[in-house]
Length: 458
Ligand SMILES: Cc1cc2nc3c(=O)[nH]c(=O)nc-3n(C[C@H](O)[C@H](O)[C@H](O)COP(=O)(O)O)c2cc1C
Image (tube, rainbow, N blue to C red; front, side, top):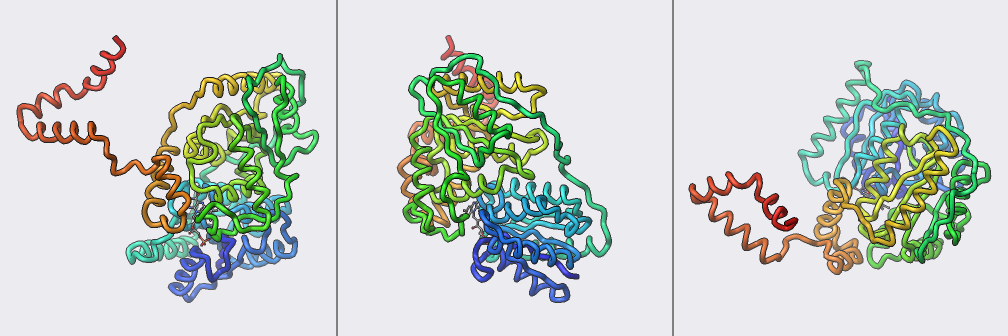
């Protein structure tokens, strides 16, 4: 069987870890033809070559199945891979994928690999592919024979299901295409930013788009206009190439690194951030993705967005784009930022959107003035623990700068030296060994913490 391998690593095939796993599969299944396309090396995130694109599409057309093989980059796929996916839709190249079996394979440290795989699954559903399964390998699984055995099982299963013509089921609703045309309206009043620095960032600010009108309405409601950065206007030349040289001291070796250094400084100095963009397929644009990939050079979260108010303006069917929503929760959560609101253009009329924008402006200033940061939820709590363990352990030598920062900001919170906790837990542990005190303890346990809080409230 001819299988198209869509490689998502921007590294060379020789250096890509993902591709070593693919090569392991190729060796293990010698009776099948692996046609490898180095998508993220051939498709630039900024100026993709139409020739390279059609060569890949022609190659996919000739194959019976597709394996999406990519490294997880900032909770999704690399920007170059995202650009390729956008091009499939823009160039109406669906027919190369239509009705073909597909599976996804990734390497990562398992930080939000679930979002990345669901994103690819959603894309396969949109392309009317028959998505079979996904396999998310840890970077170091190659050292564990049991994990490699599972990988072989996954791929063998993929091939068998194709040969048997097995039915597959879609997992994601198709996206609603129509949306209202939002027009800018006079603000309901004027908001005093109370000395708070507001920074609006968007990818494109083309006239007549809903995002443009949302920006105009929002900016116009302040007594002092917020600063705006348009990513498309910046002299950006590269997507992240995954060299990890930034791990030492957060200095990116790419020639346009100062563009990002200046932007990240601006972000550091702001109190309130608003990110805005249109939905392209099942995420923001590849340019926005490039921004997040390049942010990797700042180090692992929590980082420069911490304790800031962050809002999102989204144009497009966010209600039908759960992967983007999960990204927003995970990004703001791991950054320990306050997700102050998400305003979309999905409401029934322009007046409602204008009011939502105005009230959001009032709210975000009030939150910032009161240093309000709501508690982070599971994606944030869980993500930070994954990074903590990774930086403390196996990747401490790569991310030296994170290592220092995590120590300084006490992200390394285990093993802890809180004497009170250590002492009290040990005493209780000892007491619960005695049957009488154990019975007493478990009888009172359900109301124990409430008892202390009740005392506090009195
Ligand atoms: C820019 C960048 C972003 C990354 N983001 C993530 C991430 O969000 N989650 C994760 O688990 N691993 C992340 N990683 C780790 C890569 O997924 C991992 O190193 C992968 O094995 C690289 O594969 P490759 O050598 O084929 O490019 C990131 C690496 C880079 C360079």
